[in-house]
Length: 151
Image 1 (cartoon, one colour):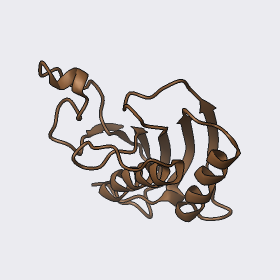
Image 2 (spheres, one colour):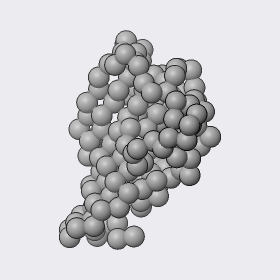
Image 3 (cartoon, helix red, strand yellow):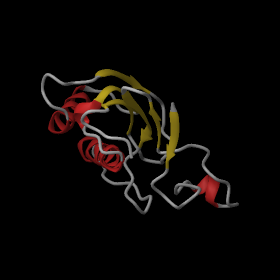
């Protein structure tokens, strides 16, 4: 078994103002990859609706969900994986009404293949670490050794 930590940003504070004031590092990786003999497990940390400059993207649930999934795709691409490899997602949202639920799933449908949907949990929370952020998604993936060779 081999464990690798994946970090796609050089900014140790990851754009969190509470940490960047005194140079405190955010103590997490973008993902953790575990290579086993017959498959690879990929655990992607919760992604929020921020761009590569750590700025919040979007004011609607649909816009923010789109950015979150783009951020997950960035990790998947880096690791040679796809959304079809994702087996579980956990969705945290500060807003859970009919329109928000509809928008979240409408955007997700553009990323996940029908009949290959992951197991999913969706919960409402009071706030996210990013001010004005409405959604955060974490994902777990299983990569077949046959389709995804070791890096």
